[in-house]
Amino acid sequence: MGQLRQTQQSIGLAKAISLSATAIDGIMAGQSLTQIIEDLPAQERPIVQSLTFETLRQWRGAHQLIKEYVPKAPSQRLDHLLSIAIVLLMQRQINMKRGYPAHTVVDEAVKACDASVQTKHAKGLVNAVLRKISMAITELDQGPNKVTKIDVGGGYLPPWWLAQLKASYPSQWKQLCFHQSQHPPLSLRINLSKITRVAYLELLAQAGLAYEEIPPIAGHTLEGALSLQVPRPVTEIPGFTTGLVSVQDAGAQLAGLLLNLQPGERVLDACAAPGGKTAHLLETANIKLLSLEIDPHRISKIASNLARLGLASEAHLIKQADAALSNWWDGQLFDKVLLDAPCSASGIVRRHPDIPFLRRENDIAQLQLSQRALLNSLWQVLRPGGLMLYVTCSLFPAEGEEQASWFEANYADALRLESIGQLLPAKTHDGFYYALFKKNGS
Image 1 (cartoon, rainbow, N blue to C red):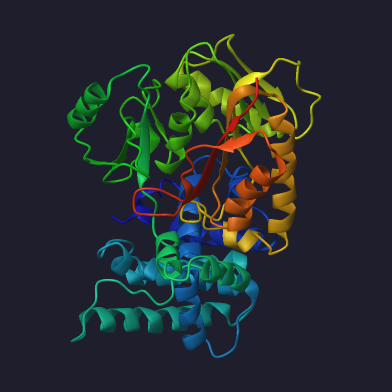
Image 2: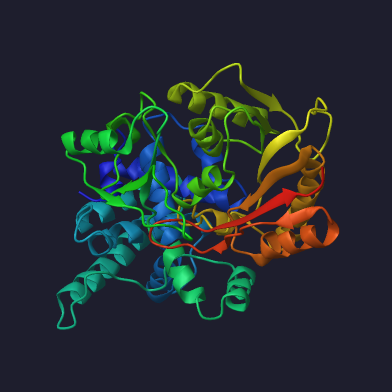
């Protein structure tokens, strides 16, 4: 069975299609899918998330087919229902002939019209359109020029976003778009403070789970990183519930390495939620860590992550605070600062394909101002000789290299050390920007 089908539990497909259409309605109105599914019962979240994300990943392809087979532009609700059903029909090509049978998809999509689309002709239109598209897919798959995957456009990027990629990466933008429309790997970070890599690999072997090595990224070897060949729910990953391992993109794991933490150091983790990098810092060395997070609802996620990993202690404090202000600071300088700055998240679209639908072009300028305010504030709490790591999960130079250059130009005591710079999305990792600064002086 395909990935979408694997996530289905007690919820029927017609209801899943309807709920996913509602989720896409919310995304188009400016809500993230994370916000939307928080209000759903736990048993409904996996299939709705999987189905919605897969539809957004294949958005352009689905809409090329809608445009070809629907003579008059459908209503928004009907458009979303059709998009979901078309993606389900494409699963046999996308997932190597796995997924729901075509007749099931058609029948369940028609049923979804009962509660979702209040028009007399909707059922007939959905039935006719999906049957034609199903036949076209079958003919393409069985014809003389047989293919194993339909790819008629991939994911959606707004024109301004695409223009920035073309301007910034003229020889790479097509490959970037391809990576952003693919499924991300299920990357793990072994908790090396609890178990060795060799011992954890033995646990995977005992569970019959195949893994892939993560090659060095930008010249750095990540000892705790690997990816599972076949994604699994976290409950099926050996050692997850007991804190032996976490799910974290390999590119994000560079943060814990680049800061070169030493025992006893006083470290600040600004903008810490949901706590993946926070946990990695604590796994790396016995440090005194302060984590800041402005959103009170996300603070609980940090605490939950640390509790699962057995990392909660008196040496680690979590405060609700705006890191760009100074009212949280007790006057003691930090040895190291991790600034994982709020950004467009343009480098992690394959994990969150709703992002291009939520961002607006003028968001970048506002985010740039926020990033500079954070750089300004956090540089003041770093001791001379200390290190600050600036990180974003963005592909846009305005949030990466332009910010690092601005910071160097405006702070005479800022020395840029090894700087990975822009890390572009690849098979093994997402896209990030890294710049490491040392504070000169005594």
